[in-house]
Length: 372
Image 1 (tube, helix red, strand yellow):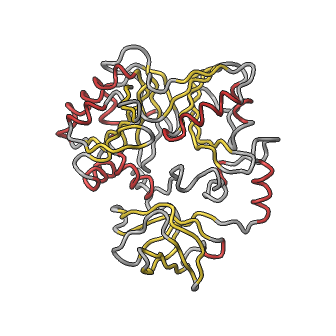
Image 2: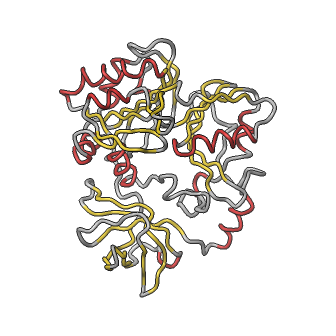
Image 3: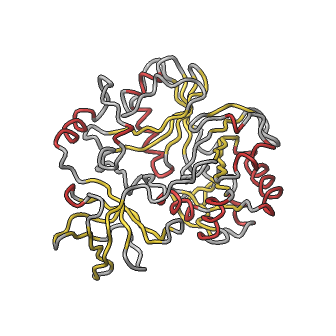
């Protein structure tokens, strides 16, 4: 990882992105590719074949010690200690009010070895948070910049990635991980069957020095088969269609996991965790504003921050919006009052002062086809 005038940072793949003609934009403190051939083409590649993503801007923290599980459970809503080596699990760090400090994934690599991946925009905040809450029996190491992250996502991912990986990818379960060897990469890498697109796929955690070699190799040998380099623009559309939250939009320090529709990740049977009492009170009251999916009637897309009305009154605001190619409609999420979150509720989204009709629909907008 290098820096640009002490401001925006660059991943190890920055020059590779330029060589592929990527359009670069600031994101999470990095100069990142927003698109290559175009969002629609990249979206189609992931839904029908496979796409390749540079996710090295996301921060990686190594956690070691006998007490990592118990320590993490006190700070997050989901269970951690009962994870087995080779498992990955989605989780949310919460504040005292139940709001989301960040949504993350824990990977258990061994009995006392873990990998924690946090969002790029929260990297400094989260490192300060885990350090401030450090406990005996827990060692922390910030790998941000030293380790890269390359993801292959799409229905052809097993077929196209397997020739380079020693581990049996087809045998790996969803949300599992394995330490293995990969062609052209020195030392052990971590491969996980995780992703943020709604498709099958894998994420490869490897030394930054080896990232360009693997990226170039995968594209050189699979581009003619339909593998496309993909930017953050396509990734955002893919995750929105799949109903996955984006921190800063569907989750914030003020928007709780309950409001974001993530009750499944909150384990209230844990005796204590930060924000538990606030979340319990919110759950029991039941009248909290919540994230709802909606589709626009017309061709005008909704954007984050647009006001949302129902029955002549303002009931919330848009949190995410885009054209959804998989459903051929403009789709979005909004944080709305409970009374306006029921499927079928008619809404009006105020687009530059003009009301546009929309309808609340269930999330996700898209589910990948089941394998035959």
